[in-house]
Length: 569
Image 1 (cartoon, rainbow, N blue to C red):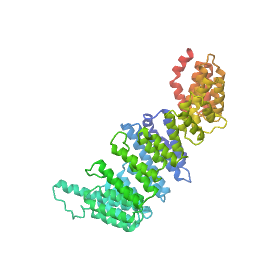
Image 2: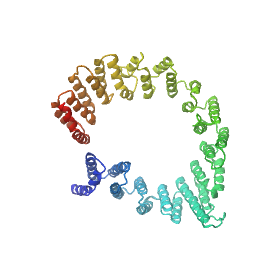
Image 3: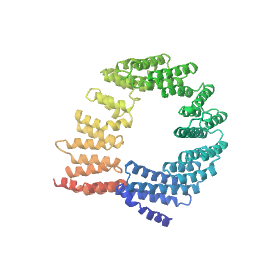
Image 4: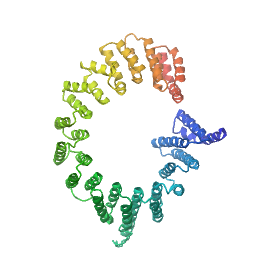
């Protein structure tokens, strides 16, 4: 086992110079250590699928980091290619042990498609089909896509989807892929005829979408309860002039088969907005809403109303700066929905966001009639009252709902009342013995709390609050930095107190926070004893995790000259 891993390590040495050109030494060291651990796991007698997939995920993360750097240099491409090849090796080996795992085959195929390994992809898909074609329609979908889109082989693609549909008669995915493939091929042939200057023959089955129609008819016989399939077929068919007749046939079928399905009506309505006709936007919106009105007479359900209202809010998203008819449309539609009790809290909020500020109070009043206890409406109400200087009502509303409102409302309320009498009660609700807010609020407001205590009470109160918060892990390391800043602003600096603050913070966050240790060293150099820097340095090395310790050493070395200057002052 060790010999094999050692050989793999020697092979990895070739990659080190390329890794060094993209990452810091500490990061390269960590990458190599991680890979060595993964290699050892692959040598275990009882191999697990996760031994391979975790290693693959790690290598993919390295590739992602390299691509994120945006470099297209030879070195970057070389590194990506090296990692891609190792991932391919891992998939091959994994499938020797777990060849019955269909999901693993799919992951491998998707990876090969992503990194454009066309020749290998065809071999892998064929192998997967031999083993699992009878249980996985997705493998046939991959095969059809590759043959038609990558290899431009319509005959082979037809063989694939024919075999696939024989094995998976009720597969929506395969019916749609075959349908899309045939429409695309008819369009390619049509363009070739037009470019040659010949006249199009509308009766030619290769040009008029007849093959796609056969696939559609197969779907109507075998896939009875999947409206999404027919919506997608319809949307695909309306893209080509030669298949407009087929799109109408699909539409009629949907009306008959899915008249009680909200998705059908929603697709029918929104397609009016997507129409490529030369009609005005206002005309398209009117046609769209006519469709919805028809739908609501047939299907007066909450889901149908939600789809209608979502579209209304979308088409009127620019009401504040465009036509008056859109503003009127939004107002009329929302008032009508309100009267019928069809608006949800999210609708009222979006309505407010898209309307003039002068309408906010009116919309809020309507929302409160229907949803007096909805927290999202209450939060909007609090913000609105603060913005209109109705602070007493806002504060009363906040107090009665303090245990339910989101962290953002706490931040807004603290910011508004920071220099007002109410802040004492608010901070007590956050940091007191009977706190009613989440730790997230405490973390975000801890620094503000210490500053407020030092200004309005005393430094001792700030210290006591710090001891309580830092030991309960309610706040982060910034709390320590804030208190140290307050301490160093005093006329007489209490060095022992500050060391105590750092000690408590390092007990909580010392394993991962490099900056905290650097701040501690800065403090000793500036205000404490430079002689203690060495002790602090070694304490950091023994406390920090391995990776963070390496980074700490690098940072310390890079700032050594700065430290020397400070110690000489």
